[in-house]
Image 1 (cartoon, rainbow over the protein chains, first blue to last red):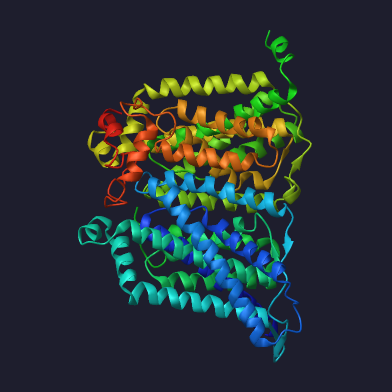
Image 2 (cartoon, each protein chain N blue to C red; image 1 turned 30 degrees about the horizontal axis):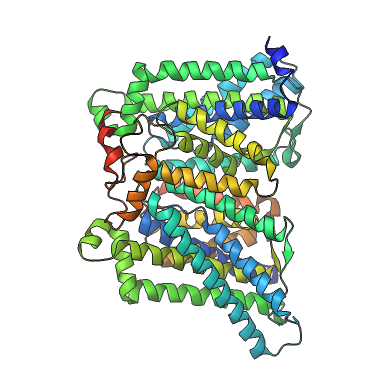
Length: 301
Length: 321
């Protein structure tokens, strides 16, 4: 039973990160019908920003007061969000906007070129080996009846939950969120009603990138490493989460992200870690077979 | 004669050309499979299955290479047929995703099958693939594609691709055409896989993965997905380009990515299309699209290969494809 709860905690932690990246995929796909292959690399950029900022700041790692540690963490997070947001803006302007609205594979391939550039750029600047990201949150392990939870895990889940709540607020409660939903529904009608479609798509890509950047920071700190190709498999699985959930409901994507994380952790704990990566694709095959529009509907192209 | 010419070419370029030829064969498989409007994101997996079967037959059962090649073609053909039957009624995106998941499942199965080496890959394959073999097969495939383009089946496939309902209304047996065309492409990919396995001499499970399949899709769309010259050009160009960029060993993939993205943005339909370049140059069409892009409707012209409405110079002759 202890092992079960331990794996549950581990699963929720990684699953919340999947959910954040998957939401970015879903947002861009819903609004522009673009599968943004550069999204996982923006996640990777977030982790590298954390690495650069923390090593430049010479954070001592241990012995920081809680408030100072949280402050440093927030600083890193905000800087990473700014950098990835700018990357998202540039990406939208130069690559997504000229290619959107064409055959679905055209933006797919254009963004895959960007992802090649980002991967190899990171490899050029930071070297091909993973770099060690020093921790800022003081390591502390809470033990609740045998189940171990580290402070970094709590930070990861908290950050992810806050980001998801903020996104939900933005999409459903603000003016721009309403415009975003209108463009996702019917771009031509939205434009006829006076919605600035280009601005909405720009906002959407940068918000998705910001979320991916934040997820990259937390994951980089959690595993205390950043690598040029860390985004590949992680991004593919997040994309699968988005597909399994369908792109209609934000909550559905969050739930499926958590579910995938938990199921993967359970498979690792109880079956075999070799099969861990198979879970996502088995889930996708099963869902597509029975519900070709995703579990909770939508992705009409 | 070929041998005496090859003797003067640096060995490095022979290797590159063989790799490019094999990639071109598998990309031609993608072209065939997707000719009737399917979207296959698993051609690396089909090629890999053909490669495993061919490699096992030559290595463990001492079959002659030609028979193993034919066995690979058969495996690819049957897999393609099966996938086509499963994805027949799905729309393009869902079909692509189903094949993606199929490919990843194949990777995991290969990982866990000890008979074919599991995670270590299948090793000990004899070297059978030569420059001549690759280019004879490629020439054969191109010839078939050339005949296919002008054949009843080719026209039927293009009709299915443009509008499956209209094609069915014209009396085309769309399920049959789609299945046959997908299976043909699978067979070609299988041949490519066998050739690659007998050249690289090791077949790894990862070779069947999503990223390799995406590579073939990139070759296909980059070159232009509407004529067989497109995938041929795309595979050749994008395989040789990183080798040409070896003057800067560290930056070459950065330059490669920039070139790939830039060309896709400027030539939205791929480099080679049925439409001649037109009155306006491609760069100027791209520029006007960028400038005048405050128009509505990212999804207005969602149909395959229809030009965005703000590029009239290229749009005119689209109807005649």
